[in-house]
Image (cartoon, rainbow, N blue to C red; front, side, top):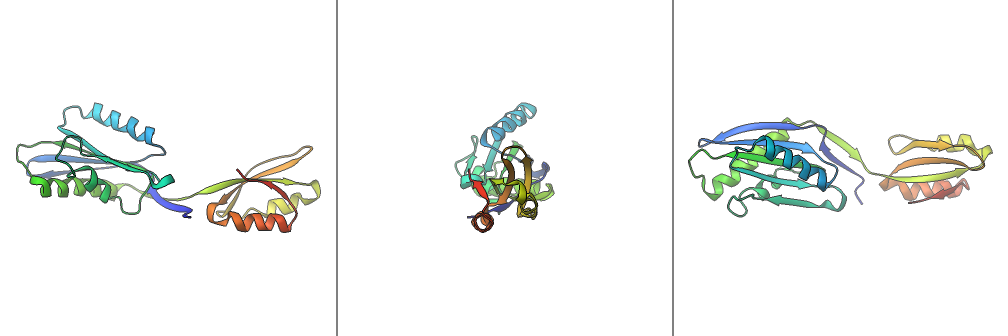
Length: 195
């Protein structure tokens, strides 16, 4: 199971001209499908005078991806935009087109949409993301030092602790290291709760 991926750290935009048509590629990070559609709606509102607003997005969880030709001939916009993503996840790209009067043909359209998407992605900064699983560890008072030593960023991150009748520590554990972390907890005889 993958526990890390690459995404966009911020928005990127790039404009190209092909045979008098203008293509504006807009790439942006997203965390969920509804966030993508909210951004798409804002772009459509801002560029209301455009001929087409073609798009694609891909999420890491479940590797969910969708795309739309938005009125262009089938397969000439959404899939070419999506093909520009490479190994990136949790992002969306909208390519806004203003028709310039010259028909590009299906091959020309596909190339233009992919090029606009790739250009926008090329100017957007990239970020690495690690996927964590939250593990709550219950710690007796005489083992508090042991609990603090369990943290080893970025693999195991201490995110919260509380003290009282039961002392608890919440750790974010890199998804690929959870089994090893649980084994260490058992060796140290510390109670834990997995989600």
